[in-house]
Image (cartoon, rainbow, N blue to C red; front, side, top):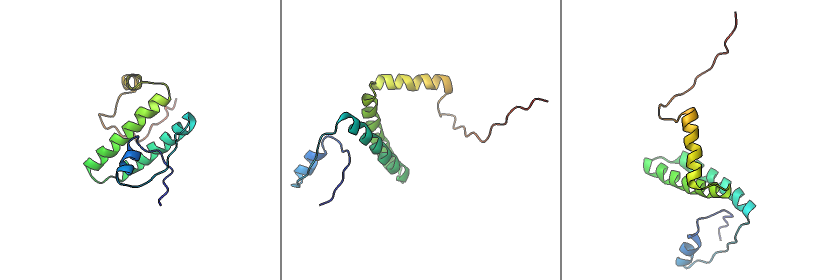
Length: 111
Protein backbone atom coordinates (compact mmCIF):
# COMPACT_ATOMS: atom_id res chain seq x y z
CA UNK A 1 0.00 0.00 0.00
CA UNK A 2 1.50 3.39 -1.00
CA UNK A 3 2.16 5.84 1.83
CA UNK A 4 1.70 9.51 0.94
CA UNK A 5 1.89 11.52 4.18
CA UNK A 6 0.79 14.73 2.48
CA UNK A 7 -2.01 17.27 2.49
CA UNK A 8 -4.73 16.52 -0.04
CA UNK A 9 -7.85 18.31 -1.24
CA UNK A 10 -11.05 17.72 0.72
CA UNK A 11 -12.72 15.42 -1.81
CA UNK A 12 -9.76 13.08 -2.32
CA UNK A 13 -10.90 10.60 0.36
CA UNK A 14 -14.31 10.33 -1.38
CA UNK A 15 -12.63 9.84 -4.73
CA UNK A 16 -10.45 7.08 -3.28
CA UNK A 17 -13.44 5.45 -1.60
CA UNK A 18 -15.39 5.50 -4.88
CA UNK A 19 -12.67 3.31 -6.40
CA UNK A 20 -13.27 0.69 -3.72
CA UNK A 21 -9.96 1.35 -2.00
CA UNK A 22 -9.47 1.93 1.70
CA UNK A 23 -7.48 4.85 3.08
CA UNK A 24 -6.31 6.33 6.36
CA UNK A 25 -6.39 10.07 7.11
CA UNK A 26 -6.29 12.44 10.05
CA UNK A 27 -7.18 16.10 10.56
CA UNK A 28 -4.20 18.39 11.10
CA UNK A 29 -3.98 20.98 13.84
CA UNK A 30 -3.51 24.62 12.81
CA UNK A 31 0.29 24.59 13.04
CA UNK A 32 0.58 21.33 11.12
CA UNK A 33 -1.88 22.63 8.53
CA UNK A 34 0.19 25.76 7.87
CA UNK A 35 3.37 23.68 7.61
CA UNK A 36 1.71 21.25 5.18
CA UNK A 37 0.26 24.09 3.09
CA UNK A 38 3.77 25.51 2.69
CA UNK A 39 5.04 22.10 1.61
CA UNK A 40 2.08 21.73 -0.77
CA UNK A 41 2.85 25.12 -2.32
CA UNK A 42 6.42 23.97 -2.98
CA UNK A 43 5.12 20.69 -4.45
CA UNK A 44 2.79 22.59 -6.78
CA UNK A 45 5.58 25.01 -7.74
CA UNK A 46 7.85 22.11 -8.61
CA UNK A 47 5.07 20.61 -10.74
CA UNK A 48 4.53 23.97 -12.44
CA UNK A 49 8.25 24.26 -13.22
CA UNK A 50 8.18 20.76 -14.72
CA UNK A 51 5.10 21.46 -16.85
CA UNK A 52 5.70 21.11 -20.59
CA UNK A 53 2.48 22.58 -21.97
CA UNK A 54 0.44 25.71 -21.31
CA UNK A 55 -2.46 23.48 -20.23
CA UNK A 56 -0.32 21.68 -17.64
CA UNK A 57 1.20 24.97 -16.47
CA UNK A 58 -2.22 26.55 -15.99
CA UNK A 59 -3.45 23.46 -14.13
CA UNK A 60 -0.53 23.75 -11.71
CA UNK A 61 -1.01 27.52 -11.33
CA UNK A 62 -4.66 26.82 -10.39
CA UNK A 63 -3.42 24.36 -7.76
CA UNK A 64 -1.01 26.98 -6.45
CA UNK A 65 -3.83 29.52 -6.22
CA UNK A 66 -5.94 27.10 -4.18
CA UNK A 67 -3.04 26.66 -1.75
CA UNK A 68 -2.46 30.42 -1.63
CA UNK A 69 -6.15 30.94 -0.80
CA UNK A 70 -5.82 28.50 2.11
CA UNK A 71 -2.56 30.11 3.28
CA UNK A 72 -4.10 33.58 3.21
CA UNK A 73 -6.88 32.30 5.45
CA UNK A 74 -4.32 30.68 7.79
CA UNK A 75 -2.61 34.07 8.10
CA UNK A 76 -5.91 35.77 8.94
CA UNK A 77 -6.59 37.42 5.60
CA UNK A 78 -9.40 37.14 3.09
CA UNK A 79 -8.70 36.89 -0.60
CA UNK A 80 -9.84 40.49 -0.94
CA UNK A 81 -7.33 41.58 1.70
CA UNK A 82 -4.58 39.60 0.00
CA UNK A 83 -5.41 41.16 -3.34
CA UNK A 84 -5.40 44.62 -1.73
CA UNK A 85 -1.88 43.96 -0.44
CA UNK A 86 -0.90 42.86 -3.94
CA UNK A 87 -2.44 45.99 -5.46
CA UNK A 88 -0.59 48.30 -3.02
CA UNK A 89 2.67 46.62 -4.07
CA UNK A 90 1.76 47.12 -7.72
CA UNK A 91 1.15 50.82 -7.07
CA UNK A 92 4.44 51.23 -5.17
CA UNK A 93 6.73 48.93 -7.16
CA UNK A 94 4.88 48.05 -10.35
CA UNK A 95 3.91 44.69 -11.78
CA UNK A 96 5.71 42.40 -14.21
CA UNK A 97 3.90 43.44 -17.39
CA UNK A 98 6.90 45.17 -18.96
CA UNK A 99 9.13 42.09 -18.61
CA UNK A 100 12.05 44.09 -17.20
CA UNK A 101 15.17 42.05 -16.41
CA UNK A 102 17.65 43.91 -14.17
CA UNK A 103 21.26 43.25 -15.11
CA UNK A 104 23.19 45.37 -12.61
CA UNK A 105 23.17 48.53 -10.55
CA UNK A 106 26.30 50.66 -10.21
CA UNK A 107 27.01 52.71 -7.11
CA UNK A 108 27.32 56.41 -7.82
CA UNK A 109 30.88 57.48 -7.18
CA UNK A 110 31.52 60.99 -5.99
CA UNK A 111 34.43 62.71 -7.70
